Image 1 (cartoon, rainbow, N blue to C red):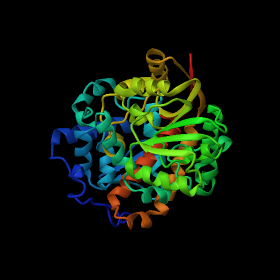
Image 2: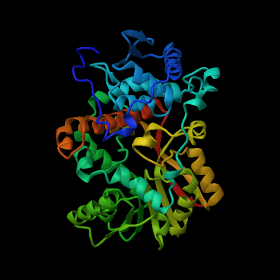
Image 3: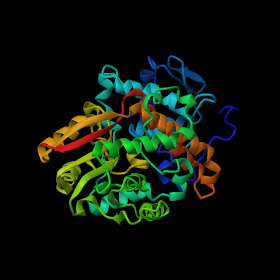
Image 4: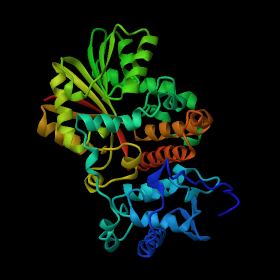
Amino acid sequence: MTDLFPAVHQPVAEAWPTLVPPRSNPVRRAGALAAIRMIAKDLPATLILDNREYGLGGPAMRVHRTAPFLARLGQDAGSGFGEAYLAGDWDAEPGTDLADLLLPFAERFSNEETRHLLPKWAQSLRWLVTRSQPGDLENDRAGARENISRHYDLSNSMFSEFLDPTLTYSSAYFGDRAASDLATASYDELTQAQLDKLDAILDAAGIRAGSRVLDIGCGWASLAIRAAQRGAWVTAITIASQQALLAQRRIADAGVSDRVQVALRDYRDQIGEFDAVLSVEMIEAVGEKYWPVYFDAIERRLAPDGVAVVQAIVMPHARMLATRNTFTWVQKYIFPGGLIPSVKVIKEVTGNHTGLHAQVLRHLGPDYARTLRIWRNRFIDRWPAIAAQGFDDTFRRMWEFYLAYSEAGFRSGYLDDVQLLLTRR
């Protein structure tokens, strides 16, 4: 431990039972250390472990507690690294941004030639430390409501502290500014960028006065409010109960209660006909088994000449296939039951199971990286107010890691965010 880290974090075991260090296993620890050495040989980052440095130099991390750090990595390749951060086993060195540190790892995954962190012989042993998705995260009606509630019903007040005033929890649209220096990313620019994103979706769907609109997974109703302000009639549905309550209050405050109906309803149970169906960053929570059901539900709700616009986080198709059955840190701690699709699989599902044609309108990967940087900076700035709501320091570390991990994914190209137009073939 170094004086630069005078108070190394230690989670409360009763509150975070999954972070109790795993039982000591010398073989697994040795395997994890060997893997670190292999990964670090050509990685432009620095890992300081027992006062030895591994890596080619660059953004640096320091391991405070070697034994539990290696034990976590040796037990679960999908979650161990992130869990070690939550537990306080390691930190980014002072002066190193957490997303900058995670970026070299994400770049390795996004590069087809280097996307495997380990050599082929070591990859063949990954099954020993890779966990499969648990069976209790099924996204049927009951399971989907439980999975969604674990994230979106955390606390409306908590989300309000770091989101912009529109409470839009998806990528903003910065246009030419998206790829500019992230150090200049400012909370002051976020609201307009979110409104620009909402308008881009409404423009693509042709929303105007009198349009009948269905918003699937409406969040806190920013898109529904914006559509109603154009004179549209909107049905906004969600399965997050606390989110629905705040959405209704926001709609009333915006003066569009006569044009927007919020319903606590599963997308599979919606009826009626609409000129446009909108769904922003919801497909990631649907689950692979239900993708055909999701797009079929969209098609069934469309009027004969209606269109749909779906904004989706996506990853390269090969990576989706390689990770579809694994249990990752994000699935375990942030979005249970979810799976990020690829553009290719969206086109395959719509082509094979519906009469819809999917066309990519816009890529928002750099925009999402900027959005996430702003959210993380704001989350850190507002942490005293969030902590006052009863959230502890382990929760803070979890959300800092989640936001930084996601930012690195979009900066590297491992993740992208796309707006798709769905029309009848």
